[in-house]
View 1 (cartoon, rainbow, N blue to C red):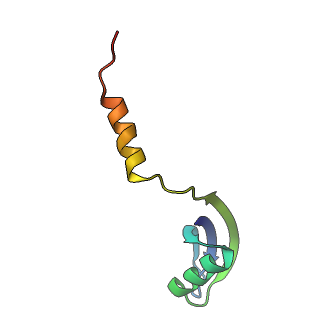
View 2 (view 1 turned 135 degrees about the vertical axis):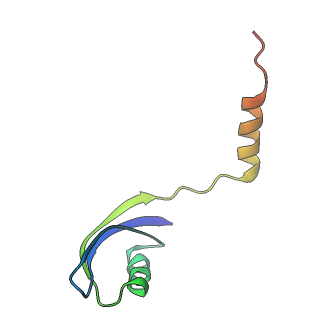
View 3 (view 1 turned 180 degrees about the vertical axis):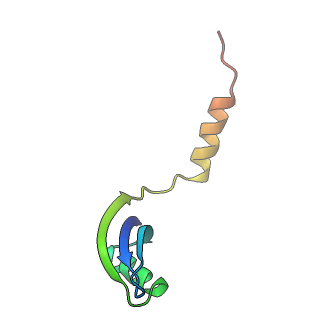
Length: 73
């Protein structure tokens, strides 16, 4: 998933900045935005970050376990 940032103008004329929406692509993020804000205008859009694959539970546990081992000095 990718994070998209938006700055919009609502139907009442208010500007809302720093809206972050996750989406498969820009169209998916805009669709989700439209579900939250009816009759809005996009003033600015940007791609914030490509979401990396989430690490497996086992990888996290092994990382924690390796940090808990006492050092032999």
